[in-house]
Image 1 (spheres, helix red, strand yellow):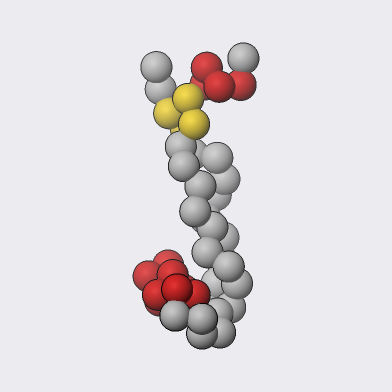
Image 2 (tube, rainbow, N blue to C red):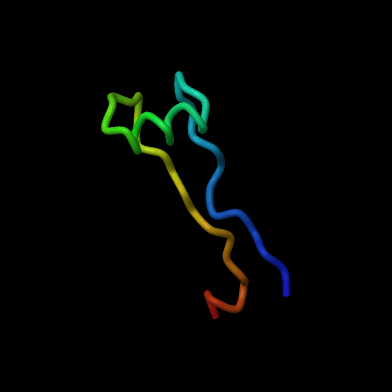
Length: 45
């Protein structure tokens, strides 16, 4: 069973950590953070 990443990382002006922390504190961000989990190939069969 192998896992694969769903999408390539999106571009932005903030680091992932900065974006996440600012969004959790209701501050402005350049875009919403993209939190996707890895999927097993068996999920798509």
